[in-house]
Structures are given as structure tokens and as C-alpha cells.
Image 1: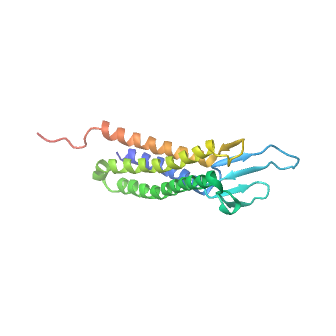
Image 2: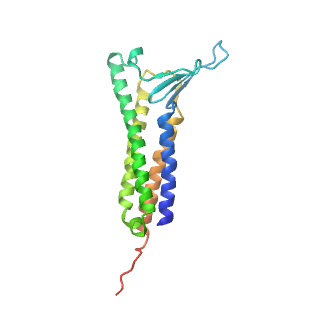
Image 3: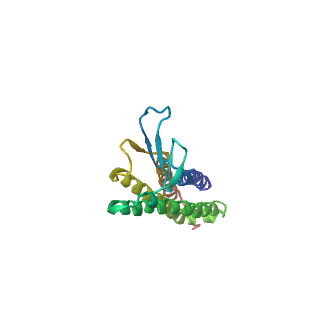
Amino acid sequence: MLRVYSLVALLFTVGLTFTYYALFTTEWVHFSGARSRFPLPLSIRYGLFHKCYSWNDECMRFPNPKVGDCEGDAGAAFCDIWQLARVGIVLGALHGVVTLTALLSTLFGGASRLRKRWSVNATCLLAHAATLTLALATVGYLYDSSDRFAVGASLGSSYLFALLAVILDLFAVVILVTTVVTSPPEYQPIP
């Protein structure tokens, strides 16, 4: 069981690193325009909190009501839904710390905790995956349905890293539950 928890903790630590990368970078949606008469390629990178332009290396708040991102019926809905993605990834990052603490306390808490705390740890891993899935689904929905993103925009590396974090969480849950269900009990009753 110790090896299994070590592997699960390692997988989750990598996934949590991916979560924080996704939280702090501006690569959720990326638009790369065709080369114009300017010598530099023009691109816009959208993050959950900022939008950055390649031509002047300037980043600004996104969505920003002051520049009209939230105007009109569709704009107000866009801003509210984008806020939901922000909440999902922030909750995922915060819950990730709780999950890592639970995994490490189980890992270093002795042999009795290894057998008894698997359901708590599996639930924590699933909750972390669920909060990230909320952010992924929200950004994916807006990417497909909103006219805020130009034609030719694509989902960026932050989106992919958050998706990888969800996959690692689910893989860790499968490993943990499979090990607990298929392993024999540690102590056999003496007749």
C-alpha cells in the first residue's frame, strides 16, 4: 500500500503543478493571426484573468467591462460564465492543497491509515477533478459558442494542462480503488 500511495501522491503532485500552471498563465485560448505587412506575427492569448497581446507585450484584465467585454445581453452572460471558469480553477487550486495534505498525512501516518483512509483520498481526488472539469467545460463551451474569440483561435496550453490534471486525478483514483479492492486483507483472523 505504501508504494501505491507514493505513486498516487506523485501523480497528484504533477497534476497539481499542472493546475497551478493553468491558473497563472494566459494560454487558455490562443489566437494567432496571419502575418500582415508587419514583421511580427500578431497573436492574442486569453487567460482566465488577463488577455495579452503579442505586438506590445501588454496584458489587460479579461473580461473587462471598461472596454465593452460585458456589454449587451450576450456580453453580460459571457462575463458571468467566464467568472464560473475562474471560480472552478481557483477552487481546484485550493482544494488541491487540501487533497495533497490528506494524501501526505495518509502516506506518513502509519500502516493503519493506509488501509482506512482510501475512501477519503479517492473522494478528495474526485472533487479536485470535478472542480477542474467545471473550468474546462466552461471555457470549452465559451470557446465553441462565443463570438468573443476570433476565427482561427484555438484552445491553448493552459487548457491542455488542466485536462491532463483531470486525467491524472482519475488515473490515481483508479489505481487507489483497484488496489484496495483487489488486495487481500493485511491481517488474517486466527481460528
